[in-house]
Image (cartoon, rainbow, N blue to C red):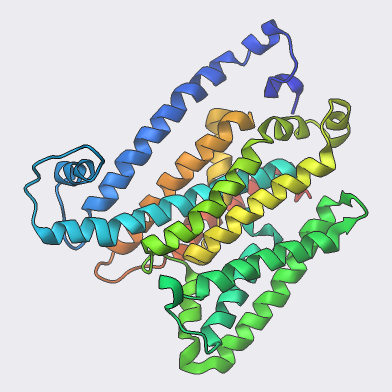
Length: 362
């Protein structure tokens, strides 16, 4: 990694050598946005009841303010689109964008393409929180979306906070200690969740659904619950995009260039963990999205975080919407859990990255 690769403080002639990549990136972001719209419309039209794409588009446009269109569609199609499929598409897009953006942020902080949002115990903490909610006497449908996502968010946030406190020494957070603490806490939380599965009987069955991940329980209430937290995390990360670029050089060099390394790492990790925790509380444990998408984005868009963060959000949303579409149609009417599909796609990719890097780096 060099200053020239990131376009930081270099002469115009040096910047010109990477201009072709910047042009591709600038053109790619609008294409990624259009692809996201196309994928979303496709997902709205496919399923047990197929709906013509143009009809779905007209139905969506008709719901816009100050727009009135004559749409020849039965009432059942409107219920399918707006009450069943659209909340599911919105949830999948939101979770995909959150996991991909947080994955890119984690990889930038740790300078390691093998890092992902579940590195700090987010998934295991959320699963334990969800298990506690499921096994508790609390009502399932409180507030319109239930206690499970609330407890899952609390568990994920508590796990990340604990890992950070364990790895912190004064004002310095050591990357290897952070990762090792995350692995240890994940093992503890997973053990506690497994104990509940073994002793809970039929009452513990919903825990399996959360561990596999999916969007079959998606609703507008859950989407509205998650959206503000994901937005806050995205803003925190985006405000430090340039600092993430400088961190790719070296922490010592970044300090010489005026970056407060410790503060930047803490803020970015808070933003990324907030996004990942919220995504897990919304959809359960869906792995590898934060690993696969950011790596693919860097291959196409380069390493400038001022572009790759937005591109990761767009591509991550499209990717998870497509995965959800596949999971609910491949053996319809039965659904394949989304977490299983992403594991089958992401596992081989993870092994490929390991083989390519040859060694693990912390």
